[in-house]
Image (cartoon, rainbow, N blue to C red):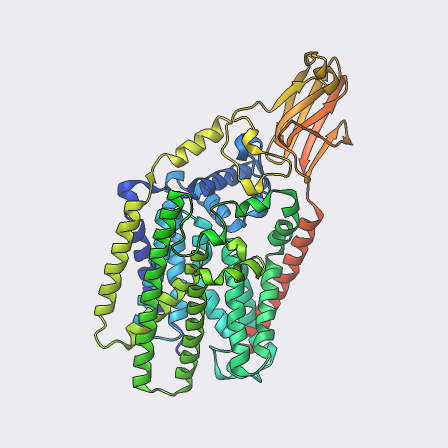
Length: 577
């Protein structure tokens, strides 16, 4: 197995970029693909970019969600996708952000697939594998019909994660690294790199992170059985633990603060695994229709992957190569086949018990999401089949026809719009904001009861006065500061009053009146923050503070990053020496 040379990487960039540009070609004719999750992601990009201009570099509170009342979306949703979208929107026109995002991510996807397949095939076959992965049918489904930019970003790195998992487990790599007797320190660099890519997947998309965790556990478990040694498991466990450590600044707050929101709404009707196995029908025609489309894509992937695996295995058996390099390729082939089988089975209803009992698996929501993993196997086996094929032009032609046909169907079924982003920008500019998310709604709130347009502050009578029919006092309210993370108001009132803020209460908000911490009241039916003030002059200050789990999460991530750097440096020195 030869290491890819610089010239090969130039070819890989060209093929991957060219494939990505072909994918977005319909955007220049039809407009922007406005799939199921487009508004959610675009709104997050806009909100984050706006907070950067205010000086908040790592937002936690989403200011314009729930029509300006806000929500803690950025605590629970992994940061890389909305930060990338916000970064692109800060340097190019917002109308071009979805296109550039897709091209950039699918180019990276192709390069990661090239890195994996080049370890087991020729240069030409690896380039073919890169193109296959960049334009795999599931990626087309995500781009044209789902607009799940976070999942798209996470799955771009899946092939690289598999490669590093194979190396860290000793299945791929030099002979010393593959030896079960190799000490843990001999693979410092592979473990550290695996941890970094594993963290990138988690920081891109949580369901993808769950699938990556189970997938890599399967790889390391197989290596333990195959090598009859616990060392692959120890190396894998070290990589997984270090990867989770790198994500602690996000994962620890997201895990702890779930008790403060209606997180179970993530598994509301239509979002449960039992309702999304292949070819499942429920009492929602639109949901059922999309499930059948996704199921058709899954069957296509399963069939092509199976045929390519069988063909490449048959040709390998005919060649009967038994070199050490070929042995490593065969072991990698087996591992990828196991991943393909696991991904396929988990999309079927017979695995319902696993979705119920395995930790956090139910939060993947849609069993057909395992096509994220199956797509790697699809590209891997196609590259292997191309490498073994006698008439090399037949397979590329067949895959091009398959990909074009799949894209044509999905383009026809998708929704295309050029006004979504301008509408969101206008809504933020005029202060009306955008819809909130059920699972991120603070406890005690029903965000559907919140007004679509409300002033930043409203003066209310005290509860006793309100019950007696007394009008609110003629208080003067002057807003000194109103940003995503801090609100400061000066109140001058002739009598005691309550100030209703356009803000949802959340335990991370610290409310002070004249320098003293107070517990805000809530408007009926919602968690809208209502602050009581006395007669006279009052200053209300509301700040989004750093909580203990965010501080400790940051410390764990920093320590993990230091360990990763040390492992990379020591591994590099060992390789040089």
